Image: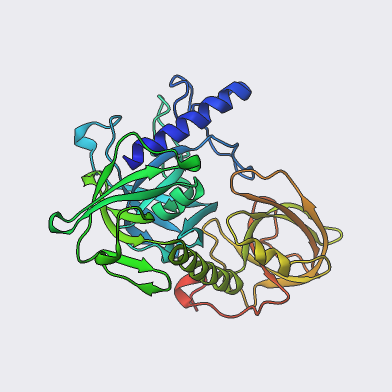
Length: 367
């Protein structure tokens, strides 16, 4: 049910994109004879060019921003390919939303059902076929439905049968044509206000957000978490926002280098999207920043010593594209490091943040 609704939304968006102008690459629901969009180094992809895939997170390499999905079953797959593990890596500008807030791979529990936007691998066969293993965006069910202003309305609770009967409700109280029956059990976490509830707190008429697991493998899915009121949903989001802000202040905002003026030692960067907007307030004009060299997985070498500092000279607004924040900064440093080259990656620290050590396993120089 979830996969079909999401696929419909992607098809509708693709159709609107096609109407707005000619597309020379394949999109979900578009011309199957066209090749899938191929990413280019140093360029953000166009809107609507990604391929939608949903599935359960079954493996995580949080240090290298990678993981493994068990894709949801759908009619485009052969039955022999059902539940086949699908490894992926987050793009440098790829982002995650969890509980309605920015997140990292480390924040997502194994077994969480996710909705993703993917691009095909760099090397494809002569027929243009390859794995969709380059991830632009991941969202849990909570975030996916909240972003679409959708929720589940509880129709009935059958505790004796471990069933939660719900129906999807969208903007304008538009109701889905058919109800859905999810599995609930003693392991399901119920969130009520600022406290932990029980299954007895779930009642007909409530508009809830749900996180799921084992979708399509065992029917529509099993509920891992249910937020039964608006307050509990806001609490979940607020907590995740703080987790995200702490991580960014310790690791720096990610960006890539657009230009380097070698004579004046001026570096121009574009900040990647997916971070909490409040963090922008820590990067005003003339604020000193520290720039740590990073690789494509956004790991730094030695962020305490491998950084140069200097003031922000200019803040520019550029078009917001998938992966881009639309914010471009120019800053001056005393010395240009080897890694300060166009199309390379940096982590930026505001002068308000302490550039501190990080765990050895996260460093590219693990000394």
